[in-house]
Amino acid sequence: GRPALVRDQLFIGTRATPSLMPHRHAHALALDRASGRVLWRHPIERPVAAGRDANWGIDASPIVLDGRVFFGCVDGRVLAFDAD
Image (cartoon, rainbow, N blue to C red; front, side):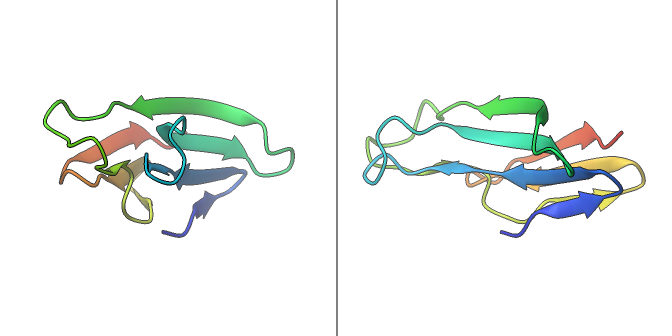
């Protein structure tokens, strides 16, 4: 998905694809718009029921609404964080 930009913060989500990058991790992140510095990071754990080659992590563009940022996950969950 595409990142979401609110004032000076950029919100992005990543997905892990073990068959392409076996040591990659999935995260929901907020970055400082000017410097690119990570403001916060929330790791997305691999689901227990996921197969060896299964993808996990963020599967949609983040949405910012009423001071919160929402991330849609591959496994159907929606994560919500304060956008401030």
